[in-house]
Length: 162
Ligand SMILES: CC(C)(COP(=O)(O)OP(=O)(O)OC[C@H]1O[C@@H](n2cnc3c(N)ncnc32)[C@H](O)[C@@H]1OP(=O)(O)O)[C@@H](O)C(=O)NCCC(=O)NCCS
Image (cartoon, rainbow, N blue to C red; front, side):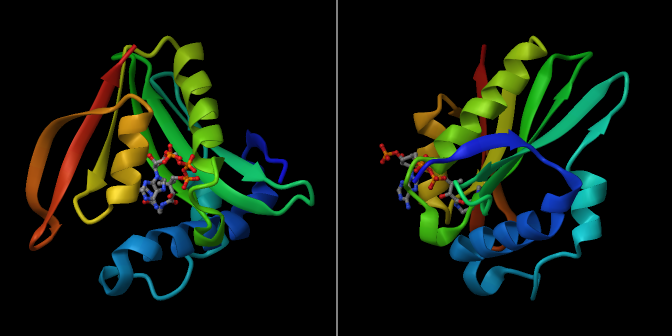
């Protein structure tokens, strides 16, 4: 399968919403509050933004037929040179096949091109696949938020420095 990673376009909003819903459900299971993908308008409002102080961008991974299989949303505070990996998701049927890593390369390019000093994100203790993914891409654990989004489920604060 040949995968192409490119910046988000408005026409991607509905497909990205489905990918986020399906991928997050794969580890949240019955903890997932959303019952269906968010309306496409959510992504039109949140996938990209730019102010003098901060930039948010989304990249999508598409196959040779133009079907979207994954996305990553990243941001940076330009003043602090602090990046954030906001969300990443790959359709469960395509997971663990290298697509997330290709998306991470685009994220890395985004942060490097804006001279990021540090990048951070969070991952849930019930999400060992994503935790392994982040460690493989250079993040390390900086802290733990106990019982954070759900009782009995900790959130790991992860980061790396350039
Ligand atoms: C996390 C996620 C984006 C990774 O994307 P992916 O395409 O599956 O990742 P890759 O195939 O590039 O995998 C790279 C590494 O991630 C880790 N990994 C990915 N899926 C894994 C799984 N199911 N179990 C264990 N490790 C896994 C491994 O370290 C893997 O390296 P390896 O191939 O040498 O074993 C994807 O699995 C996903 O969408 N998960 C559900 C949504 C989610 O958890 N988002 C992050 C919320 S914080």
